[in-house]
Length: 387
Image 1 (cartoon, rainbow, N blue to C red):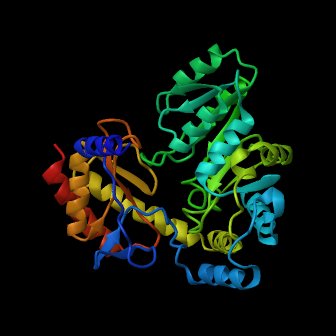
Image 2 (image 1 turned 90 degrees about the vertical axis):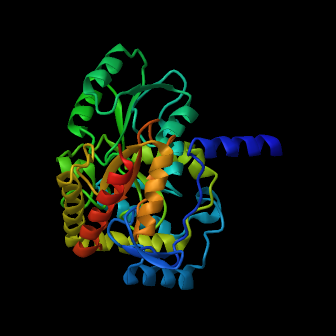
C-alpha cells in the first residue's frame, strides 16, 4: 500500500496536481496574514464579510453559553435543538418557501437530496459545469445522469425530449462556482415545465448575494415559482457553516425521512445556528453590503478586461482568469502571494483539463485601493505566465 500511495502522490506532483494547505494566521477577512506577511485575500467565499462580524460572533458565543458546544446526536435521535428549528424557520421565510431543512454542508445537502428525489430508472439532467457535490449526488442516486454542455439550452431540450423516464430531475447551479456566470434559469425552468421535470437549484454562490433582498438567483431573475427546489449554503455569504434545502412542506418531509446524509450525521452545533440566524438578519437589513460587493466585483472584472485579460462570462463576484497549464497556474499563485495578493489556483478535476485558472473572488469589505493594486499585480503576473 505504501508503494502505491507514493506512486500516486508522485504522479499528482508530476502533473502539477499535488495540493497543500495555505494557513491563514488569524480570522477570515479581506486581508490576512500568511507566513507572517499581510496579504490581500482574493479567493475567499466570505462575500459579505460576516465570518468575523462582531455581532455574528457575539451570537455564537452567547449560544455556547446557553446551549453548549455540540448537538450531541443526529437530528432524528436527540440532536434537534431549539436553534435548529429557529434557523429552519428563518430560512423558510428568507427563501419564501413552505419549509426548510438544515444539512451539515453543501456536499451533505446535494448527496442527500438528489438520491431522495431520484433513483434507478429516473433521468437527471445536469449542466457539465455543475459542482462536484451535485455529480456525487447524481451518482449515489443511481439514476441515469445526462449532462449537457454548459448553458446549452438546445442540448438540454434535446435530452428532455428524448427521455422516456417517468421521473425527470433537472439540476443546475445558480451561479457557477468556477466561471462566475449565472444560469439562464428562466429558460431552464421553461424547459423543465414543458417536459414534466422538476428543477433543483443549487444557489450556494447566489444566496445572500443576488436579488433585491439577497434571496438568490430566482429573485435576481424575477422568478416566483414554488415548484423550484432550492439548496443553499450558510458558509459563504452568511459567513457561518452548514447548508439547507428549501421547498414545499411535503418535499421537506420526504427529504427528512430519506436523505442519508441528514439521517446519519450529528446535527450542526447550536452556536453555528445562532451565528447563521444573526447573519440572515444582517443580509436582510444591510443591502449596502451586496451593493458594495457587486461594485467591487465590477471594479476588478472591468480592470482586468481593460488590460486585455479574459474573465470568461463572469457577471458576479467570482472572476476566473484561465492560465491553462496546471503547473503554470500554481506558479502564478506563488508569485502573487510573494507580491502580497492571495489568489488560489484551481486545477482539474475541479475544472476541465487545460482550463486551470486563478479563481478571483472579492468581498464587500475590500478597499478600492487594495483592489486596484491587486488588479495591477495580477496583470503583471499574467503577463509573465499566460501565453
